[in-house]
Length: 465
Ligand SMILES: NC(=O)c1ccc[n+]([C@@H]2O[C@H](COP(=O)([O-])OP(=O)(O)OC[C@H]3O[C@@H](n4cnc5c(N)ncnc54)[C@H](O)[C@@H]3O)[C@@H](O)[C@H]2O)c1
Ligand SMILES: O=c1ccn([C@@H]2O[C@H](COP(=O)(O)OP(=O)(O)O[C@H]3O[C@H](CO)[C@@H](O)[C@H](O)[C@H]3O)[C@@H](O)[C@H]2O)c(=O)[nH]1
Picture 1 (cartoon, protein in one colour):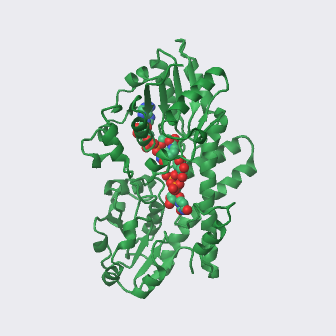
Picture 2: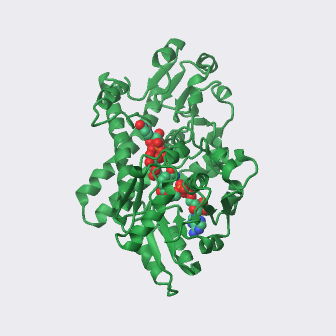
Picture 3: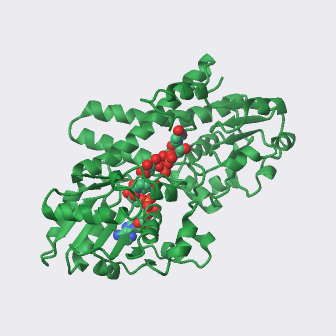
């Protein structure tokens, strides 16, 4: 097999952008072109001002500064990039279906299929096609079917190479990946394709961290990894509810169980509930697949992870309402944070959206401050729910850029994202500005209980009585 010198990635999103930037940066001998049909997104990736990149990730702009224009290119010319590349990554979105069979659970593969059809139409030479998107097990079969029926004699090898980066730490996760998973056929051509992709990662990762499997194990491992991670969060969140009833402390429990090397300390932070574009979508997908194979008990088991997550979000909003004397109508409640976790401007499935929505149902006046999320995004998230009209959303919820001012005459403040800056605020000043009794609802457990109570706050921390 010829050495890979040209690759292309279809989809310039949260995964395609950072992943390809790192590959280009670590492989100066490979020309990397990232393409997208979204012209605005590509224009943003090409922005001269690196503070205006379409996504915010620590370390991303430095890498873009080094590589863009040298061997890293962003373009809307999808066909040209496909035609020239020896290896094509498909990194388009695979959201939960919102229509038809599997609505609300199955992955919507229309964007992936469009990519496969596009590759089939354009390709004139043999190519390796890499599934980077998260896909249901056996999707490679469908892609191969589309590619093999073009009739123009081109040979395609399909690999599965799921991405495990987490947002907010994407660059570090890519540079120091725990493992890279490459699934492919065990035929000589399949093995050669797996090795060609492995060679790329070996430019900066030790060979022993690159795992080769068959395609189906690789596809399914991605869903299973997310299901296990989300399950840990739901497990600890379920216990946080019990702690609040029993005077046990969730931080002490996480620490106590995390010391068991079989359990481990990571991913045991109780919260307002997990968000992000992946956990819910991928578990729903797993549930759908299990159910479609008649495995009801397996499907029900994993569905419970989502049920517990919905409960945690609802429980937090209910607690706010109950604390504020069972009515929040006309009361000003400030949300610190809107992103689904710190260090990202991504808000997909953020718990904040559902908490705000529940409080707005009770006619609370919500004020939101988030250091990285735009006003436009926040309203778009709420409008998407279709709980009320866009005008009503804009009347009931305001977005502000000054967190201190936001607290003036507020009845309560809810911390829903764990941004570091919230910890260093002048909380005494905030207390003075708020109406009394002043309530803080810490859904991320980032503030000091003793300190907050000393200042005078009525302070609630998730997982503590
Ligand atoms: N976001 C994450 O942290 C993360 C991590 C690991 C895996 N994943 C998976 O990676 C995939 C991509 O996720 P994302 O967050 O980057 O999505 P995204 O929505 O940010 O980006 C996808 C991009 O693909 C483009 N696109 C769609 N169809 C196209 C087509 N036919 N031709 C060209 N461009 C097209 C869209 O315009 C969009 O810009 C998903 O399957 C997701 O589950 C995401
Ligand atoms: O102890 C914890 C850990 C996480 N969370 C929440 O869980 C969600 C997901 O967090 P995280 O996993 O860090 O971010 P993602 O970017 O969603 O990354 C997950 O989803 C990606 C997309 O598939 C995978 O690639 C990653 O490996 C996987 O961690 C966020 O709302 C977090 O606040 C908690 O509440 N408590």
